[in-house]
Length: 266
Image: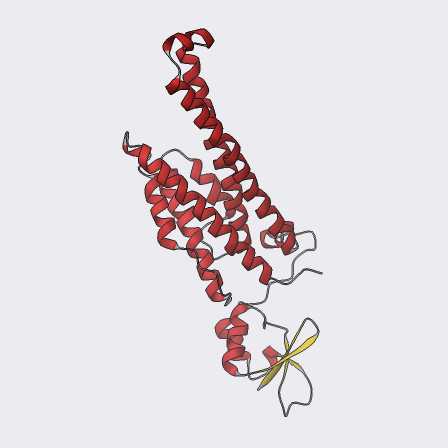
């Protein structure tokens, strides 16, 4: 059985299998002090018989770099307190719902007015063209607001779980989605890929009660590809909106759970 030092505190005892998992997780790495019965004093793990664990499972130590150099994975956003990110994610989700709650009824009111009013009444207030423009303006506002707030939330989710092994960066995940036509393909990376990345992250770090429904994300991506088909896009547009709301809430809950398991930066 082995003991190891973490945050200046003794941890353990752990067996070899547990120690292997700790190396994979990055909790035990080059320079970590370890000890077992029979050793005169604590030693860095690379100077013990456990060196093979590092060579097989751990990444090599980072090279010495200039203090002025600031690599991407050490940017300020990654060093934020978890509760700060949780607050930001919940804020964007609330903003999405508030916008949806305000604009959606307004759209229905305008649509009902356009259907129920007679031609004579319509001519009294404003022309048919103006009514149509107002209805489309409200609908467009709902769509734009939902898209902006929703993708800000997607960006925050990618930022939390992003590593060098991720299939894309947070900026690309959101930015490439707005490229005409190519964005339809990129949905499968940004949305379906996010669902897979969250589940993989939770499995790797043994975080329970996190499971984003990947088939749901896949169906959403497939649905968005039908928006260009006249007639069918009316049905799939409603289905896509419902799936989008469910997915955003699922992403938010999962990322908040992940952040709650991260230690606070002191």
